[in-house]
Length: 475
Ligand code: FAD
Image (cartoon, rainbow, N blue to C red):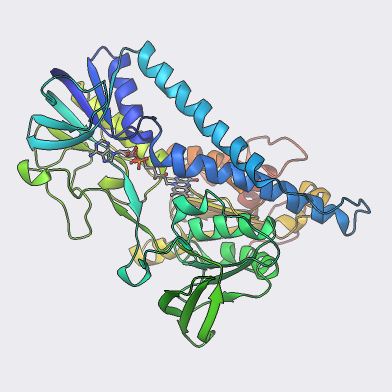
């Protein structure tokens, strides 16, 4: 079987590329290992984690009302089977939708493991009916979009079903108030899933090798989250601490800690290993092509998503950091456009990042740390949510919105936020940075009252020392 464009991997990078190419008239074949489209993001990542985080958030909000607001609810009763069923239904509906969209666009979907035999041929392994006779697919172009898998260091890979990766954690073992979960790694996946388990009633601890949680984010944004997590996790966040070894003892996992904040051993019911993800570039037959892989396992490609092989493009998690679904989608669309002969390249000023904890943290463009490392001078202006009427009405005044402004051009080149809903609010900042807005453009845009989105405008007003609700003249 021959196809004009083969897409290997049906995640948010792969299916976006396949659908755009088909919309623009190409004949496309999408090869996906699993019998569902959606990839990590839909099947075991972004979407199921957010479905569970929604439940966690509702429980937390009910608890908040219990305090000062004078509203009492009973303890939540959790029906694990029903919760999982509901989460899985979200996945099935969305994945079914993708299959329909592929069909309508006449994208041929083959369920198989694709392995490169050479620069223009994929061997299709498996026994699904969709595999053509001969099990080979030749192509003019291929977009490689095989994503990433959880990293599992050998010391933690002890073959125990009490040691979970993010995929296992999303299938929620039974949780009771006695359940003790240790999250290894203070990155976004560990903190999101740890928050879910804690809100569902488990005793959660987090151990992190570095000196802080979420080290990619600015510290002023992490601080309010850290404070809230200290409460949620009952002061069990162990920084600067290494996990030496794990041993399955049948009724739990014995963990050896080596650090100033936690030393010695402790037993946990479950351990979630969330120490990062590795690109899925092994066992693809890339050695039979001219595609190059760097020492971290990422495919080397340029801004047009071209690899060292003229027939093969690479996008998404295998094409480098940040490993995020929206970056994969955009790269997928760029690759399709380049193959269509358009002058496209991935040239973005801002790729937003969101941590969907409570409070949420979001940033786009430069962080303060990145600006410092890159030698870029920035003026930082921040607006505390304590001054926002809406934040007060919600009882959530710990938030912060800040802009990083280029003092020479007055352009906004970075934005950071922490607070409930920050993940939704950041899109305005992404647009502003991408469009090269000056800070005055933000102050002169009317924002609806009373909303948390006003803090985006108010933080820009701080630049001029004229924010209505705070008195902070520009020095
Ligand atoms: P993937 O989604 O990984 O898809 C790759 C596909 O390729 C898979 O379906 C795989 O089966 C298939 N494949 C692999 N090898 C072969 C082969 N040889 N032949 C055929 N098919 C193959 N990102 C966000 O932006 N926001 C979030 O909130 C977020 N939350 C996350 C939460 C969790 C718990 C996890 C694990 C990830 C999360 N991510 C999030 C990251 C996001 O899921 C990834 O960045 C995104 O899925 C990458 O897309 P991709 O298309 O590159 O690859």
